[in-house]
Length: 408
Ligand code: MLT
Image 1 (cartoon, protein in one colour):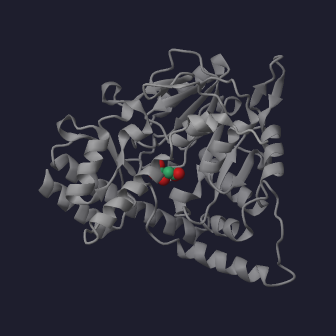
Image 2 (cartoon, helix red, strand yellow):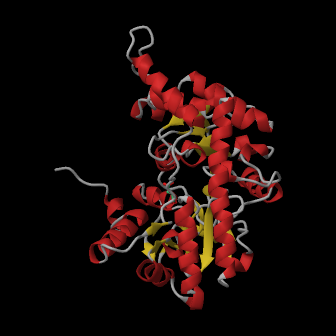
Image 3 (cartoon, helix red, strand yellow):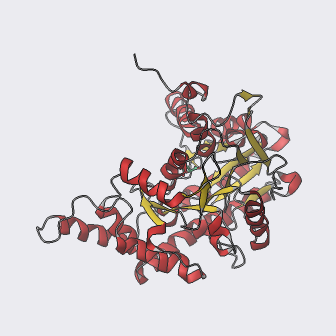
């Protein structure tokens, strides 16, 4: 008899974005003629950069020859991509990493979820609230979160980010072992300055806290004073793991490629207090459970760092950030309060007339045929808010804003 991992039974029936997809699908059945504009899940709409396409075509041709054929690659990723990552994403910002500290993967979502494999089940967790649901749900699966009471897990410390604190989180009131930070933030689109991030790194250094830093949206930062990597802060290599993704940077949501940095200076502890390099454990985990990202994909990712690739990728990011600008102006013009959209592709909107998140979601869907993501789906402090993404096509974005103006 196979016994199940009963922690799965504590989870809500389905993942937030699957729930929303179901609601939208049932709307489509009853309203087949209505044109829905999707601004819900943060999925990109613009094609891959020509430099990426060219590199991937070439990689396919490589596989057609005996000389350039590639079978299993290194589980950690090919050195051509790791070297490009270190040089372009880190050295350019004064951060020096060794090749063995970067692990290429099929995306930040998998790594954020899988990282828990190397950590004990009874670590306490701290999250910003609202929060990307993967951090919570993956810890529920591992039994780290306790029980759900009034929308909150009993063993999770929620650190509210709301209008009341201008979306600047305060250090947790209770001790946490592992802390998840995501900046630029999903879902609120807000950012932390270098000084604010320093406060978190110093807190982690002083209290032996492990920070999981998700910087999947760093390519959207426009303000030069906002840090792209937590390692820009002194001492951070001793306390933080960083997750990065090509999904939003270069439109790889369907291609799948990301990477995780686990510095060699970073230690965890045994119950007996012995220090252990987390890098070794993650390497062991990956070599056992992962066979690497495909050669074709990694060649495509490498091309993101070529001179043409950089230019083309930047143009697409500018396209989305122009959408964000159009949206922010239009939403403010409607008299609504909105945050984000300046250094991130997400806009966080306060629902009008004290509507709940789901009520606002339903009204948008049924009355103006726009799909958003209800803020409460990201955590209790998200109640009364809704997230829109700027990843749409320009014409759709303009049409959505025109509909919104007419409606409000
Ligand atoms: C989101 O909409 O929050 C993201 O697209 C989800 C993800 O990146 O997995």
